[in-house]
Length: 351
Image (tube, rainbow, N blue to C red; front, top):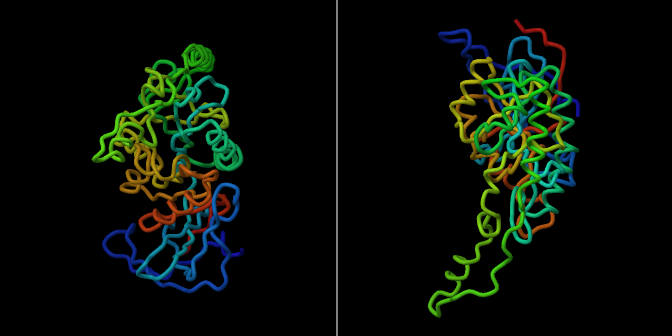
């Protein structure tokens, strides 16, 4: 649709005490017959429909903007979805992929058998997520990388000796030789581990008073620890999935190093905007170091809705779960989609 990448003029301009402050006109114009949101990848995410959708003036308006990011949020008070165009400087923007774990991808780290769990919790669901990574996230990174400020990935743990050789971090950049050495060490380390856990328990002791309580205490729906996952499994150096090509200038950040480390790195490099992709929409994507609950305190965050997947227990598809969690997140966050992120030549600033 024509409005996707049009740079709209905003109806404001009451500047107060500083040039970087403006009065925003919260003027809503009802959209007529707009198409569904998040409708580009129905294999992974259920398209979203709402009875009322509105157009609002531009929210982010950078000087010399060269990145168009249309986005939306939901407001109960406005009785509908509010969309707005945004004009960003690509150089001041980072795209962060939350927890693109290299699980069951050929690098060696794999789901423990017969009953262990990791990432999306079964090998089949991990393979589905890998297909999503290849089809949705990979092309987005490749398209934006030449102009964007940073492509970044978050991983569990802290920077261990092997991953220090593999990936650029907030502290150092490995040489080509170090990367080669790190690749060999990672292969040896991951493939030398025994991914054999214990089977399901065959019996439980239950009280007559609260058997349901006793049952779930002994057999919860998700247990990612011993004995199902063998001891030492979570201490292995989790790599970025091989479904993404990590470039030498890409940056890996680690959860255990905390949000302050990430924030300071982004601020030091004059990053103001974050496009957030990754896994899982209902868990790590919102609550880990690079989750939106942290980042939205200090940056203009755009959740790239179709570049994320929610966990999907009791279902063979993440479609409904992902849409539901993004819809809830839209109460306090802006949501975009991959086809709404467009690179352009720097827009001429309006006087």
